[in-house]
Image (tube, rainbow, N blue to C red; front, side, top):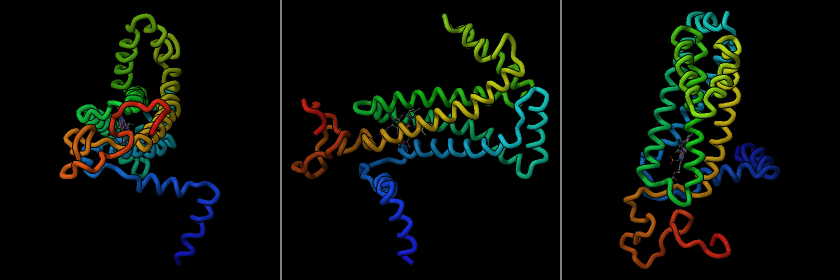
Length: 253
Ligand code: HEM
């Protein structure tokens, strides 16, 4: 039985090293005093995956033209099996995703987890935040009802007031002089291709940096930067990039 399970895994490992990589990811060491608040990043990731899956299902039925968009949304809600559920999950899930992203960012800020050496991951996080908000903005137009239309008018006009780039930005978002068929297809393409693709890539980079730098300890941790180990003053502090130290001349120690 064991051989049946192991054979394909060994086959894959020998040719790709993927199993070893996965094992490293799952069994890597994290500080012993990590906190429930540090699950907020994974919660955000879960919310994003729910959006991706429900979004793909919706895209199978949604039609991005002014004549069909609203009707196709009605069809999804009223006729397609469990369409109301998938649409509801996507619609409410969008808010859950944004709220979790802000809570995760708040946790990182309050724990000081953005400090050296994690500044770059904070910057990647800010890009994720911007992309997440743009997902919300572009998705809002898609039902093509009165709320969607006028909310987009307000959003585009707001962007249009930005200094220098404003008029260009508004023109780009509209895809012409007025909001119409070109705006809808443009928002659809941004919403279901470009922005989710960018988010997937940025999450990959974000998680790579989380694994490479290690998860930080909470600020009250006895093991955190510069603190003595509780009851073991002789034991060296936890090694690794989690403890700020003067940078050695020849690179990392
Ligand atoms: C799609 C959105 C995001 C996802 C899926 C995501 C996911 C994660 C995960 C799984 C972790 C490791 C566990 C944890 O500390 O919670 C993490 C850590 C981190 N995230 Fe995010 N994150 C997102 C957005 C953000 C944002 C908006 C910021 C800040 C502007 C940010 C900054 C950081 C930093 C600095 C860390 C390292 C924290 C540490 O080592 O303690 N992330 N993220």
